[in-house]
Image (cartoon, rainbow, N blue to C red):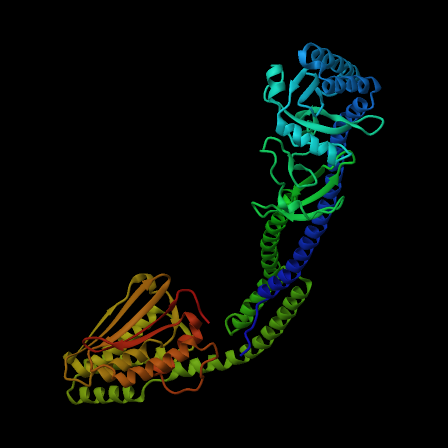
Length: 599
């Protein structure tokens, strides 16, 4: 069987199916669009930063190159260097004085070439004969280690161009000036030739690393500077001479590439630029996680927003469904409760509804109820005459056996000559018949009904004498309550009829009670009681008669227990009370109803 869905679940699923794809699409679109925009902005920023970093490097390296070029193209310096080399070749500088004078003349010229603003802290000339002559921080001659001189000679012979060194310390300059302790330098080496391409030595121009790389921290902290061999030059806080991170090896000049950090594996956007002054390369990168952090936050925000929208959708679906289901449920309940007792209670004004169509349905249902009420009133009016006639017929019936027994009792009294008792018996029988035949009203008070039952028991006691005893106890607060006429006498008659089937003495009691605006009368006897089969049969039929909202059977079939149930239903409707059962000493029947309620 196909499972049915409620309006609320249908609306909620519709909202969710509409909301989730929309939010998901918008989130993915916004994520993709924002990510692409941020990446493009990051790439543009990296290009700008890399250009600025490279330009700052080129400026400093160009200063070093300009000083180196000025020194190598100085004619005066070239003459002084020739004199110096000639002095060495002829051996005239062995006394030391000539060598000092020669070095001083070279220092003087180099200082003049450097100028008063000193764009570099140190310029050195290596004669490749074991001597270095410096100008700047250290301005005099100094011996050169054989290994250094050999390396310089190989450089000068094997290369016609300049070369920049790795960052390194210079103990000589650190000892010379206390202003530059533990400073690192980068040197620019250039072969020194005369106009005839004869090698005169090597010119070295030194610059502080913090001057060369000084602007990089202000521009970008995610920057590496490497040479063509892939050796790291910056950051110079780290040990120099190490190979740069391998993830930058495959970068293409000027193009943004995605790489992964060698240690953490995090994705990075990197761009590579090459200096026009040197063989150095600048790599500027940006971590994608930090770059896309706003996008991730936006995605999280969208997830939270989706949750909030889902909650709002649940609330909206519930509220909107309630506007539909509440009137429908009310209409459903009204239809289910539409019975004999409720049809006359139908309201004339429909319950307000936020949906116009539902209010129209309610109005149509009320019109139907009014038409049904009118039709039923016509039927009830016709049936009321029939009911009245039936009730009068009920009232007019007296068990013929009772009349026969009373006449037989009178006959027996006459044989005994008990005229006074005969007169009393006839008087009581006349009162009983007068009460039964009276058409004054179908309703009497409990007091009148009790008095009739007392007369009936007195007449019966004349027959059974001391073998029959009776007890009547009714509270005063229920004596004036009006009940159907002759509703109690059949119960007393039934108690006499069946209660005398055992050996005397016999006892009949009528007990009244009042509780929660309801009256009750219980008639009990000391007879054999009901059999289980008879009790089940009586209870089933009586329960059916009391619970049925239809008009009870109006045929006249005596004043037995079943007919009393029908009369109670006619008079009290669903408030009728009827109970039957056994006690330890016999049987009982209890009837009752709501005070002031009649049918």
